Image (cartoon, rainbow over all chains, first blue to last red; front, side, top):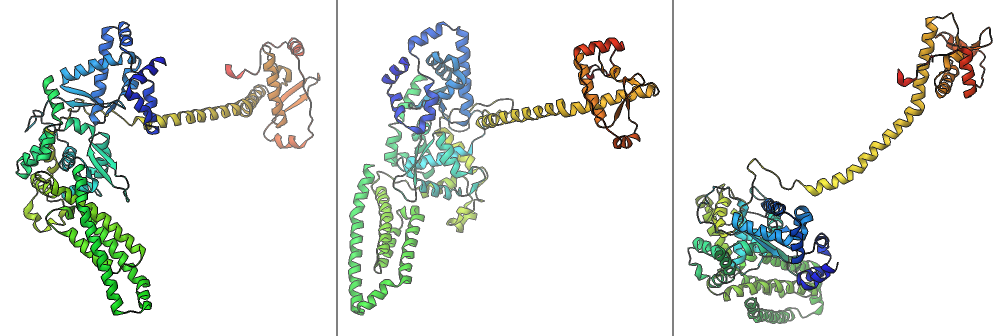
Length: 268
Length: 348
């Protein structure tokens, strides 16, 4: 108990978590069973285990991430601890450190904590996709096309758009959110639920609107995964226009996201 | 954000201007009314005509609706639709007399202002403005839209998507792939494996089902046991004893069967008591009869099928048989009983 108190005092994240209220009460419950152990605790925990045991647990964590990542829904620390780490929770930081290294060196993936408040992780590809055909002729997911269109419109319109603009644009592309699409099924659900849960999009109600209207923004995963510069490049190609002619978007694409890109390229 | 707000401010005066103009129109029209028909009664009539009021309100609603529906089209810089709408509203406002209509006018103003704000933000954007309509058009070409067939239906073609090739969205997805740094998802080589076979569903079902099943299982077994141990078991035992009695009688119908020899189990007092108990049912149901032989010792014999009714009508007598372990031992000695005539049920 004293351990937890000390931690919550030092970690601003857990304090703010406490303030988020009833909605996150469930998650908090799960998470409260887990407290980040201190480095001395980890050290003591490691002394009691054989290296093989730690390796085994790390491998389990890596597999859990890979399997859970199939659905692209962020993985919660609480779930990870509950289902995989279990009694090894006292050396959790060490296991995560090793898992990050394995993803980095073996799989070429980056394990990112996208939500430090609720402790959610995603996997991001460290390697840039080569333009043109990918080496493995993997089947494309048409939903990525749909997502790409939405993200492009949001980006090109300055980061926030009303939902109507999205729906109208999609209608022009023969995708009516009111109808069942042969490829996407319930389009409205895919866009406002699936993409939102995967953290590609944020779908928020605009205050004081009657009837209620919503607006779209980029989600945390999109910020990590999607290259604005490349979207702009494609835009230029489509419109047969120099990407630099959208000067504002060009500036944004080549300023903010470059920080993440630089870090990955330096690691390589 | 700053820019957008600036645009809104920029638009503000214009809207005010148009509202001001409308005010002027209203005064003018008031003047007109005054000129043509000065009678206040007439004016009253015009004000209260519910049909006219309703018409004005409906026209306002139509206007608001059309602005909301065609918002994106109205935003495109190539047309002047917003001005047209405002002019229409000005015309409508001439006849506005009541608060409800004025409220609708205000609502339209809100919608129009919002539109104006966005139009202004387009105007002030640096560099080339992004036009989603043009984007959609280019994208359709990229997806391989067959424009030759599309031609005329450009406007209402939204409902018909037969012109797009099957792989239209795959094309977009493939081109967009390079913009994403998505981690390749993990697949099992030996067929598919669903990582999450609805675990919450199963859990709740199991939890709810489990206790009910158990309860169901326990209840019937308890009932069955009760039935067996009391009613059915007794009935079966009675029938079994009747079977013994009949077979002994058939072996030698002439020699009487001694009641004590029949009932007593020399190895078990309790079995003896049970036998007496069960045999009493045979007597009660008229399936067996007891009589005293020449030595005044009780004998037992089954009642023949034909005799049953006859026996039932004739005089019935009741008696109580008591037995104690001491009596049981004396009887075994007296009759020199070495073996039971009624085998216990489990050794059969």
